[in-house]
Image (cartoon, rainbow, N blue to C red; front, side, top):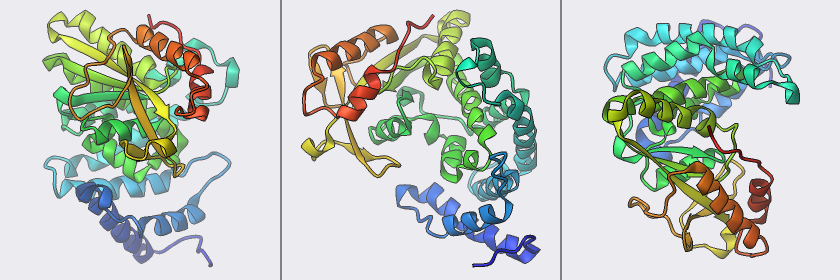
Length: 331
């Protein structure tokens, strides 16, 4: 197949229309949406415009973002006049984020890490604007956070909880995946996560944190949980309670009838919650076997896995990964 270096306007419009149809279909038809057309055209654009040396492709990210928001604006008021402004913030944020993301490997200091995740004013303003036009809204009674891979978000969603990915802007980014077109956009999730938590400043409520892996570097423990603690400190009347659901991954082949979710690896993943008397099936109702102290939750999981590390019912790869991840008590 031959790719032209400079596609003409009609070529772009044809791609925009086809990608838009697929994107909006998925947004409003749920998991049964058909993205069969989108990948082909996205791949063709990647071939034309990708810059592998810098791992970014801002033109394609802009195309996908604006196309998706235009389609979303047909169903949600107040978005259309803000599309260009929102993209301008993202484009400026990308430029500001790139030097912050320059790899320092293991030599990255805690200060550098905090700067990388908190000092991008454009990403911060984008997240605030998204919240102000109600693109980050979630049902506060079932608001959920997660750690241990995107599969945990899907698991919590299957149980009826509302994660960041279930909001309008979170779902849109999860669908069009523009962070794959410019790696600087991965950092945007931290800013969206912080604003996602800020909706509890006025109302308070219960937050459910589903955790497969306790990792101090995870967004849950670096951004979201500290944001909630800050709200509790600054607004005591907010009455926020965080319930940690400790997840243990099972050998899916031995539990064919448990709720399972399929990850990007194509593998079916099955989890059980760890309660005071062992593993229990999570249900669509509010789970009573939770922990309010994240370090107590970590210790419970760590002790259980060490005591049962030879149990064939447990997923051994997940068990090894979890036990090898250090976790310090959050400040």
